[in-house]
Image (tube, rainbow, N blue to C red; front, side):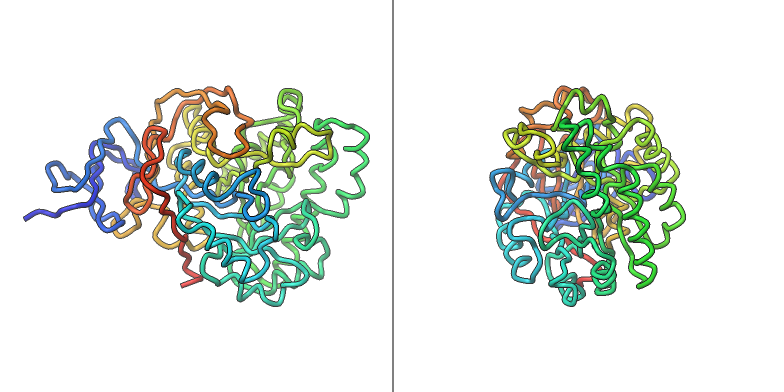
Length: 443
């Protein structure tokens, strides 16, 4: 008697460790259990993937879902729905909510809120602050924790870690890779008048210039080496940082965002106004080209969306009082697949940047490859589909995207979570059943 499966994907082209090959894929008990010719195999459900590519489930390791306290912008239900519709199977959520995620109770509250409402798997960063540095090594290992996030700039109140003494303490407490937003807060304060006097978001990259980012990144690496702590530099936006980080890849991994790889000033600011405002800023074509060179040379480890929604009403205010950030979790896959279609990166590199890379550097269990024994988290795409990204497609509560009107080649067709299809052809299926992302360090 042959094997029986809960779900079999037939006729598709799978991105496997052995290469991108045409093969069927069998799933049982939420795990990949067979690759090969499964024609005629007994299965409770069959998915015809003819003409489609089956990829390891995309992991977005930087999102802001705004719950608790800022649910008018986003919450776990709407944010994870956007993720699933965009082909994303797991997200790491950031701590700058209200209240900030600083304690075990804060983390437990987020885990409780997500249960039964999340369409994809989640993990939550704990924020570092002057008040909790002594507890970070314990907090980073709690169930549901993605690790520790440090804001060196662009944050307020108890999440801002701008001085070297507190930063060194935070880095010294813990062993997991620590994610860091690198902007030099003292320089931001010194240069704020540039934004205020300019009064238009085109001044955003002048206020928050490349030197502001580089200073913070250099400080971070110096202190991280001092305490031998692995770090992850979020949303690198400058060629200056990439040139510096090239010599420090042994201790620092690198994230780039679809926004910084796709948009460029001054055109983006003239066309989008404050909708193009994010921290660190969208920069000019020279910096964007430098990011692509770093990506081509293997320096970039992961693509994260930095999904950070605000309402259109909030964005309609007067710069620089307008909030920084833009939605991105739903558009990460189509934007990056369009770069694949245009020859900017290979499909294999796409898989590494959006799935295998995050699994490798964060120590995620059971994700990042299509192989026997791995959990069945899959992103199924049509590389030839031509679609137009629109505000109407966006499931995020904010209801807009900076990529509105953009035509792309490559589209997410289905999202598979733990062997269950949760999105197919733009429709969510069943009930939300996302769980917790699992990590080696937390086992």
